[in-house]
Length: 192
Ligand code: SF4
Image (tube, rainbow, N blue to C red):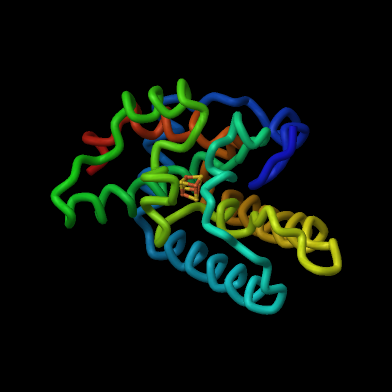
């Protein structure tokens, strides 16, 4: 099975694929810091810069967000999931909508897609995770799109591991919806 945001092999290597309440609480605390926000801001800029250069075609079909149908998986760290959910929850509050609920995640798992998919498109495009920003099904005119995507992912993943070490945050590498489920059911209220 193909993947964006990493590989199943990497997930197996970096697992444990679970996070304790203490892990989730730490991710949430760290996700709210300037240091982590700055890290993801720079990572997003770096991706945008490479994508501008490579100019892959995106027909906004939403195919890559329907994981089972498309035949792939996306992975994130628990810290990134906490960061993204926090930002999306905040945007949802502004739109008078509810924060991410565990039920939404479970429903998306049953459908085989992402809980943020809306009418075939990403409903949270501004705050989507790094893996979604890097992955394009178009491999480019030279057919080397998969190479630059994996190289860029590896570069940012290495930086992410270093960030975890620097801020002393627990490192967990998880399938996207598993990570969302952890964060959605974790000790969100107590940490705010
Ligand atoms: S966050 Fe958006 S782009 Fe990423 S998988 Fe979900 S719907 Fe697709």
